[in-house]
Image (tube, rainbow, N blue to C red; front, side):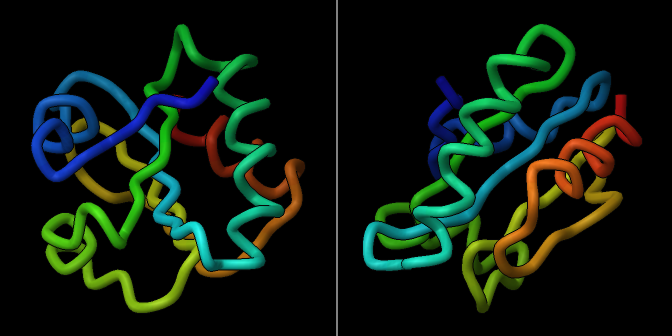
Length: 105
């Protein structure tokens, strides 16, 4: 299961200067988010020991969403050593997300 990022834990959990993270910005009412969510869960199961993979609900955690200029969801950020190195806006296949994830490991 994917990690739950929040405004409170985001800095410590996602922006670790010595690691990698994948953050899925989503909301309950977002149809495409419901397609991406299970893929994020699968990737978390596959890569969870190497990369912190999780979700951030934009409705309950607006600060991080604003900080990163997230205007459309789903938006998935790929973070390495505390820096955003790639971004996926909109739904994407598991193969596409896996390729982007493998690039930050």
